[in-house]
Length: 262
Image (cartoon, rainbow, N blue to C red):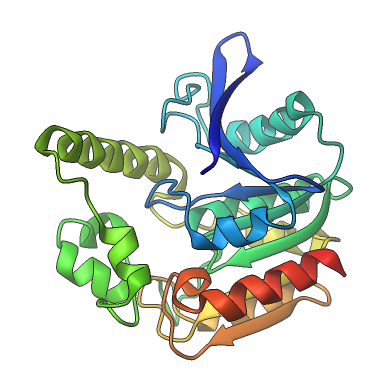
């Protein structure tokens, strides 16, 4: 199991993060579902030192009042790298975390060595709009059907799992709403905050992972990211949706590890 640590980024911002493993640092940015230490991160931690921060305002991390807009969040992550003592980093981002990771890589070009984007948000296609997460979240069954290829799979069951204790359930549900609220500050209404005009700046070697049946961010966005990032590699998993790193765990983790090691 990972350990939880806290670090002060500024006088008014503390960051909680999960960390496990040793070796070259790999920083993982989670999506709107919140941070759960999962089997994919476990696999990475067998080869690398995996650091998974909670986004500001979630999981006990502070900073939601200090960070008032998109660029505040991007600059915050640059500061976090400094405080963690990471000069350059292998960066992995899922969904909203992928949106942040892509923007960080485009802005701080020399800081990101390798970039893995898993079903990232951040672009917008008029002909193929992504689903309004903040509308569909009120209908859990519909939402989960868009997130997973097989709702009975261990991956889906893990993400959807809740603690048995009623009070603990309430805490989890409240935290989920907090995460959605914080993510909504940066994604509402359209998630393209200008990344489409800057994505060409990404120098880091990039691997893009996508589930063919992603019902939240259609797989066509995977091709769009690949077309816009020089020499990016795109892998589409046939039997996966928005969590290909879990639904296709063996292949996705092996591919990620090999990419980071090359």
